[in-house]
Image 1: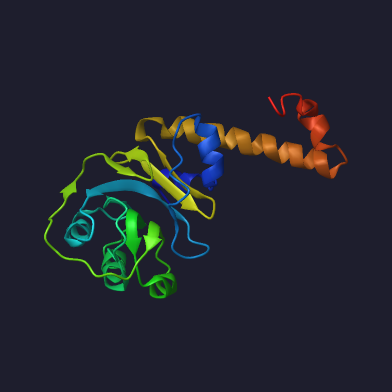
Image 2: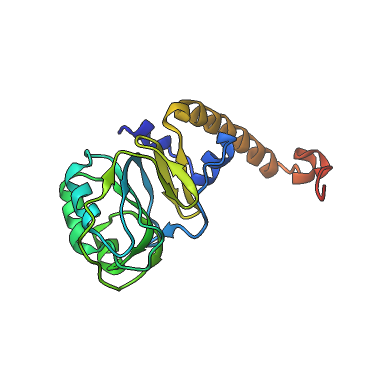
Length: 204
């Protein structure tokens, strides 16, 4: 299964809250298609806006199971589409997170390949910049380093530091167990006001 047992099945929101850190990417980074879930260690790519040569090289370099995490400056170009998706799936790549535009949404959804991007765009790209790999990149306002665990779903994206992932996942396990107990009590007739100490801090 790997990727920390696919982040133990936790949502991006749970992981963000359990981390106690600034790990949530900008809300403008969204899934390309409904129902997509992305989880895996980051393979970082520094590209250039309007140029997708770096992504072609990244597909050949990234190890199976990794997520391509690309910074192209949020540019509104179709940096990624159906052809790169088919190539990435053949290489065993788990998905794409890109601070920039992509296209061929319907085709990528049909292939079941998870893509999280800043925008959709149909403008074509040049192929001039080879790219820089294996260095920290900034995506959605968060610095992501090689090997960091990235998790995305309908709520958004988080990037968990590789050095802290086990702690965060343990906290997430505990948080979910606590919330399950709260929901059990709600189904037994307790109120949210009772369970959260009358919300004494609301409005402060």
